[in-house]
Image (cartoon, rainbow, N blue to C red; front, side, top):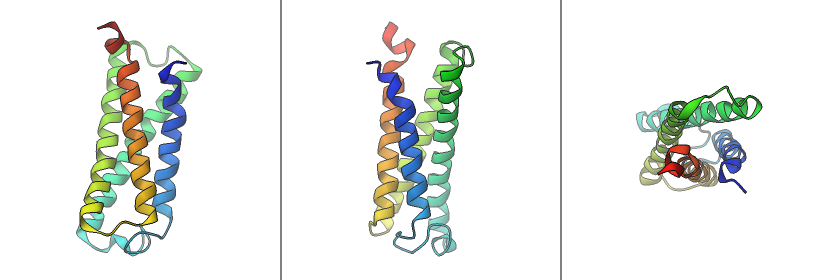
Length: 137
């Protein structure tokens, strides 16, 4: 089985876990978008997590569109950009979670969000190891 076939389902799972984590009111301070958005550190964490989710979502939609039309993302340059965007999204998601972990006590929503970041990192690794540039060298 080709490892690249796992990227779309794992990215979907990562996005789903991240959205679930943000919606649940099980953060240390309560709701992620309600009571948690009152301090600067929460706003920074929110920006990192939402930015990471947005970048991962862009790559997911690009994967879905390229699954339907193979000529939609031509060449290794577009694949390289996709890997870079995935890596930045995963790093942002991981950074937000690690910042939250160092400042606040862990909760179920944090656990789901952290799982989302871990899965996103694995998607990036699959994309790197499955890319044509890596396989040709």
